[in-house]
Length: 105
Image 1 (cartoon, rainbow, N blue to C red):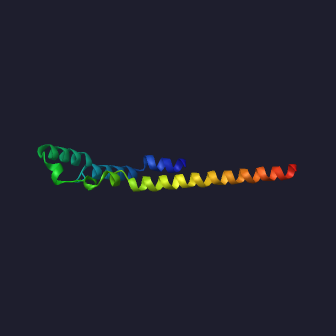
Image 2 (image 1 turned 135 degrees about the horizontal axis):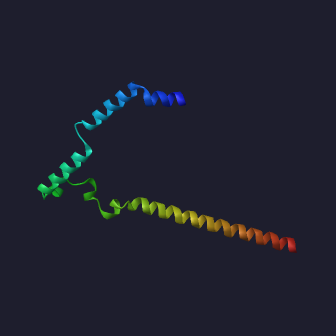
Image 3 (image 1 turned 90 degrees about the vertical axis):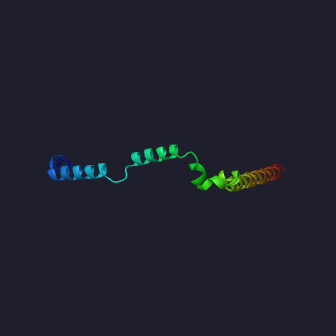
């Protein structure tokens, strides 16, 4: 491990590669910060832009936008699971009470 660290820290080949990659990242054609600033400035210069460039969710009804179908299915599944579990507990409680009554007689 020490040899690997020594090689990594002091081998000029790794330093050259790191500098090359750093230079490539700094000079890449489309930097995210610049792209963000350009889009914000573009939106500020064009006030009606939101009417032309609609987001995919802009035309959805609130039910679909807030995933109402998923919420309804999850709610139904949860209520059904709770009901089945409750019925199972009642069934088991009745069986235990019947058993205890038959043993006591």
